[in-house]
Image (cartoon, rainbow, N blue to C red; front, side, top):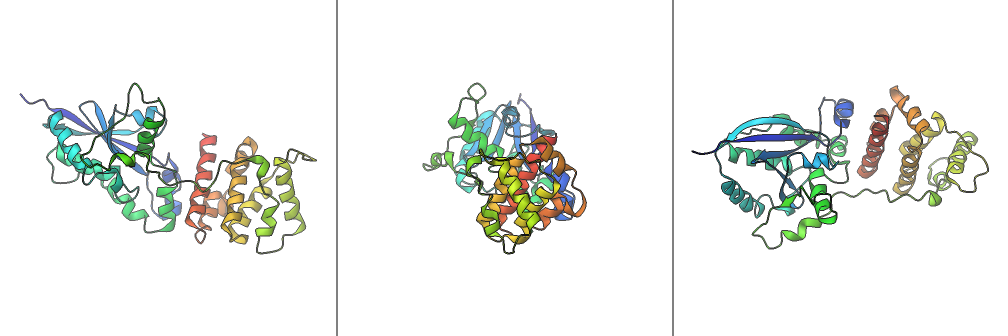
Length: 325
């Protein structure tokens, strides 16, 4: 008698709640998450990322800290044997779900989950929630939407695939990349995802003094004094220890949005904002800024800035949210 096996859909919000908090303000429509999915069957979770199709024990990418706790949805039972599943995945790993074809927005783990669950359950219609499959089509039509979907350095599934190759975290419950009949599929194991424009920050090399030179207007005396306070905070030879205020932070953000067109100057301010977020009192100040001056409203003012500047600003904002939690 054929063994019927439960099929589960693991649903991860890779925005870590950011989409639910800000999606409506950014896009004019409430969205509950930026979803990545995996499919569970025969005690394994199958995933698709930039290295192709992999499997691991259920919820392993959550246990490794690469994704939040998933929602789990029972889809039914399959009559497919493990050998039939392996044959299907091996074939797909050489064609439609090769690592080379992976795109974070257009051909990702959700597309794989859709095709895989149809195969497992002999369905001609999609078993994946419509809001998961339709989200990219909705949000990528706007710059802020594209930013919301792509602010992370890499999706957690691709990160897990790469992590498996670089450390021992997956030694006991390892992520297995499915072999492909395509000879060039293995070279994709180290395919980089989106990289941050921000380098590893060296506090001693921060160029606060350069900000004034990058501005398209003359700063007044108070603004110059505020920039000097920020400079003193990071200098090893500081002559005084400033306590920054809301006005210091608002000046930095305002200059980045309104007064600096040069991307290198915007990057300097983002580096400073990241470092300032190490101070608890700074996080508290930012969290108390409401209304038109709140970070999310200011983010809308970045519409005309390069997309990567928008992405880094959103990443900085997410780090603050993590600190507040």
